Image (cartoon, rainbow, N blue to C red):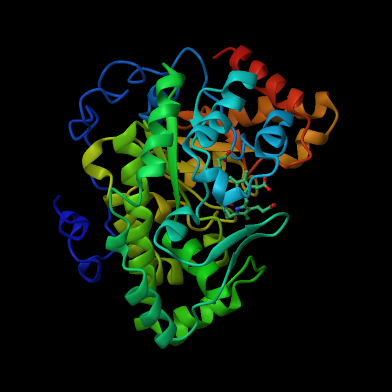
Length: 386
Ligand SMILES: Cc1c2[nH]c(c1CCC(=O)O)Cc1[nH]c(c(CCC(=O)O)c1C)Cc1[nH]c(c(CCC(=O)O)c1C)Cc1[nH]c(c(C)c1CCC(=O)O)C2
């Protein structure tokens, strides 16, 4: 196989492009039998909206739609650790399908986690219930970065290592029919920040200390994370995912200047790993009101918007050039229905100013959400007249 590094050039030579890399709308790089090329998902409402069209049915899905809000998820997961569940293909496929069956959403999002490719590269990481990813040893010094890269080279994430992912995606897509599967990865900054902090953190101080205090080590770490995330994304698309989303959940803690200098080249590298495959690429983060255009320009076709900014204002900051996804406030899922309904209608109205709009939350489904409320939101979004 052509090396991934060759495909987009050495990362050190990359600067932030002024325009997204072109993708191939006909999906010419995809294998025969892929849902986007054999007709199953090519004109699904989700794909149409991601390509800037206006499908008759307004598409909607939810970040973290698979998970603790669903009793069938809690039953499936009982007795199985999170990362073990992610790496058991039949279980990962079943959990991915649960919210699609229940809510009539317009996409499945692959049940996995942003740290799964790190685990597959041999990194010591667990997901602690109620906390999130916890690493055996944080990576904070030049020597620790060297050791990580030497012991867990990105190339170790080869087809054999990625087999549980490929298999789970194949099983899922076989059941999804005309509903597209979205593959995803964590963006290099969010992955690197987890590695440096060693666990979830509020302010990401240690990550920014390494980023600004030792830019060489930071660049080696984010280049590695970019390659690992890119391989994870590419495997999902080749196995049948019809779109991808890059989660840079923590990017909002950076100034625009630091984002452009220290993060954007690596995110560009990750998204470039699937640019020849022609699948729509969504880029999402929280607190990113000042970063929206920069996040578009690293190679995204669609920008995911959180609930801290009005969607029409986000569209304005993006010069109306790309479709958007978002941004129902997750807090309102627990509010009285008339309040939630008015908010959903407002989000839909503001999204109409974009060249395409996929309705979603501004961040993930809270675990305490009543799943019937999500089903009702889907029905409402589908019923609102254009
Ligand atoms: C930062 C991040 C992580 N994971 C992810 C992100 C980026 C998106 C975001 O900002 O939320 C991405 C993610 N994690 C999960 C998915 C699956 C698909 C989906 O959205 O339904 C996706 C897309 C499953 C999961 N990932 C996790 C769960 C909960 C596991 C459980 O059931 O206990 C799920 C369903 C665990 C996890 N993994 C992570 C956290 C912070 C947590 C929560 C810890 C907790 O609250 O218990 C890291």
